[in-house]
Image (cartoon, rainbow, N blue to C red):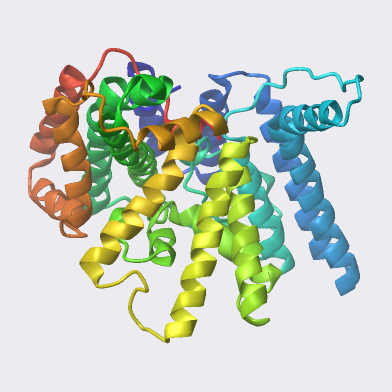
Amino acid sequence: MLFPTLNFLIFFLIVLAVAWALVERDQWRKLFLTAASYVFYGFWDWRFTFLLLGNTLAIYAVGLWIGAARTERARKWAAWTGVAVMLVVLGFFKYFEFFVASLNELLRSAGLEREIPVFEVILPVGISFFTFQGISYVLDVYHRVIPPTRSFLDLALFKSFFPQLVAGPIVRAADFMPQLARKPDVTRLHVSLGLTLIVWGLFKKSIVANYLAIDLVDKAFMDPGRYGGLDLLLGVYGYAVQIYCDFSAYSDIAIGAAMLLGYTFPRNFDQPYRAASLSEFWRRWHISLSSWLRDYLYIPLGGNRKGPIRTYVNLTITMLLGGLWHGAAWKFVMWGALHGVGLAAERLASGARRVSGSVWGPKPVAIVLVFHFVCLGWIFFRARDFASAVDVIRGLFDWRTPPELATPLSLALIALGLVMHFTPRDLVNRFEALFWRMPAAAMGVACGFAVALVEAFGLDGAAPFIYFQF
């Protein structure tokens, strides 16, 4: 079930009405929202609801196990058993084919004829997100950030809550579960801001991201050998804008929908293309994932506490694993390696020069250079495979072929997507302030008109969000 569809609109309006009708019956409300979330997830494939339920039962049992353990060794054993089980399940569904195919390639290169049989494993939508969410719960219980919950219903709702279930943000139990302990209270501010975020997300997805994908990006990356350097460069810029608008749109709609139901999620994007360093970019891009990698991987590896060499190694390992989190392919390994080495080199240069600003130069220059480094990484992220990414990079140097893909629409959308990053940080809140002053009836009419306008100018059909594949 996709957000920008009639099916989701009907589903959400029903859920919204029933949830608020049950506001005085807390347990029934939670039970209803959990059931609705399973219906939402089952829309893709009902069989995978059992995987979600199994994941929830596992972390519930592990949490209680950690809480009941009497020694630190027993607590650690329980925590790492739970983490290992979740990683094994994730590894099977997401990486089995990749590792078997890579091993077969290695065997062939060694001259061995026998191959390990490969069978197709269907990737459950959102498995990476709810696995990381479960790991964060187990480790937070282990580190005593939160106590283990004894309410299976609360944990089931936390794990399955439909706005963030399939593509984030990766909401942590410490942020969400305390909200379940109190009665939801939605003010007029929550309603106006939630509706504003939903409409803004629909615009970014249905207009900017979808048109760029169809009009420019898909063509450029489908057959890079056909196009010259200018077309491919526009395709790369177009993808940078597309993936931002696509993914931040999902986050905006998820945050807005949760807000209308009485819950708050953390911000997931903060104008990332205005970053003047790679470290700043990762503080602004997919914040829930980058902070997860920092807190549950980089810091446990030692962070920057064990000397500069170990810091550079830890940065590289963290980003390599962040790349693999996105998919089982060498192109994602390369994307992670680029960012890992880039972050390490940036840290090294900063330490050598003892500078407080960006090592990339004056801020305007740094913003441009960092953006283009990020775009280089996006080539590997978007290309069909590693070889295709190399073809795109090689084609960028061919300026003899006349451009075919540059259209006024694609150029305007690229410009719009980049301008978004240099508008006031609270621009959405400013629009919301205008919305907030309207009478309730006028607010509803304005929201309906905005949604109808996006629907009228959007493409037919609803393209899946990019991050559904992760």
